[in-house]
View 1 (cartoon, rainbow, N blue to C red):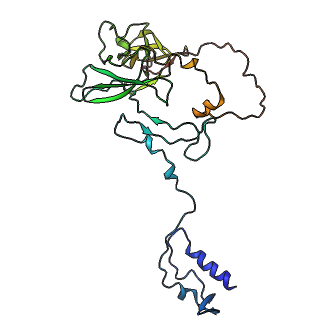
View 2 (view 1 turned 180 degrees about the vertical axis):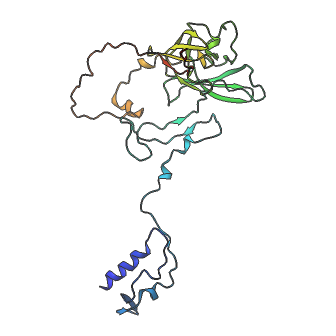
View 3 (view 1 turned 135 degrees about the vertical axis):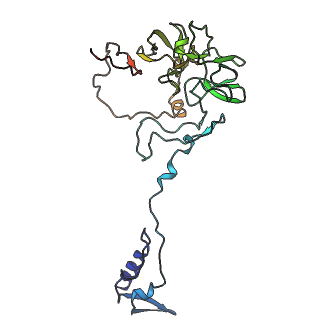
Length: 311
């Protein structure tokens, strides 16, 4: 009886919210008191015992979810230094697996790629600028190689093209002239300034948003035609997209063209790359194994053209 009463009194002290113990406890509960070497059971009001306790700080038994957020993705100032990454194991912020086959692998550091190629230099807005390639290197976070370029008083990482080498000068311009330019590999121009049939990569879907398409190793797209201020580009998947002619694109093919010819050699190398094996359970083939001949998907347009009203 005495132990249970003391347990209830201590349990009230561990509330998660601050509370005042004035009228919530019943008067006349039995409390275990200690006098010298002997324990004496005495009926004492608990309010008198806990009269000195004003408030108690609450505690939580679960971990704070804020400590699991990936802070390395939230950065405001651009840097060319490698950024330490935290592995997710295919799990989202709730801890549940969202993407299977991910986990382990060698430690990697992220190089911040500037996908917005037309980023004018300070004090020279609207003018074309040149940049020099300082380094071309392997990137563990993507299949293509990356290049460190420098111009004026800044440096940044870009997606390297097939024949890009150290010391090359690449040009970036946002001007669309009357005649198509003869661009070199690695140069970046709006689609309206390039000739039909030019191989491009790092394609923007909306002007100024940054490259979103054709960024994998060895891929390239083709400018098929230009229609009313828009350009139609064929992607590596043979799908055609229609975008504004002011969208930027890089001339040439993405580097590391032999990426699809690499030989893994053993199962351990996939674990080095952070690729986990699939389940060993037998699974029925549901018809996906056979050959399927499907027509090409329709052209996808990212241009909101005004609707033609019927007269």
